[in-house]
Amino acid sequence: MTARLPDGRTPRGLRPNGMVRTTGWLQFGPVPVSSGVWPALGSGLLALPIDVPWLPLPCAAAGFLLWEVWIRYVQPSSRVVNLESTPASELRPDDWFRPYGGIGPAAQVARTRPEPDDLVRITLRGGRELTLAPNYRVRRVLLRS
Image (cartoon, rainbow, N blue to C red; front, top):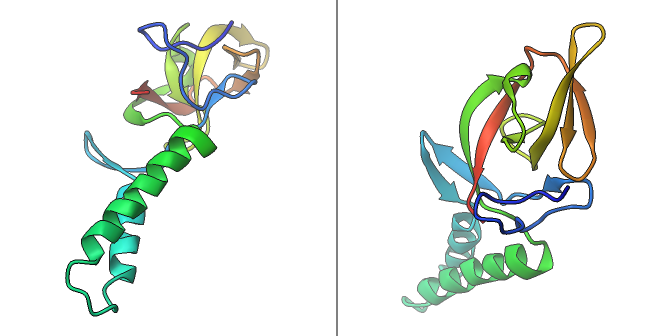
């Protein structure tokens, strides 16, 4: 029961428990802004005090490149876009969602079933199980990598 993207690939950052590490992001409505903007901006700003007018541009590019290397090879992470929030009771097998709110890791639902005391048990691909209140709102997501 391994988590898969719709095209059959395994997501980057997939942990043994079925959770997928995601990159940081900032989302303005439906438009995600990569967290790679921050290292690029920081590296460019650090070069400003040095009195070489063109230096901030290559420093910004280097900052972004280091971030890319980090999320691809050092700590693999998937790029994710948040979609609508939904009650946990509406999750279905193969849905991707963020179990802990609007940020953090993503997970793929393997199955759901009702539990006593008006709870829902969600089994994730990878075997991890979560027990949530049916009206607990989770954020559906779209994995891009």
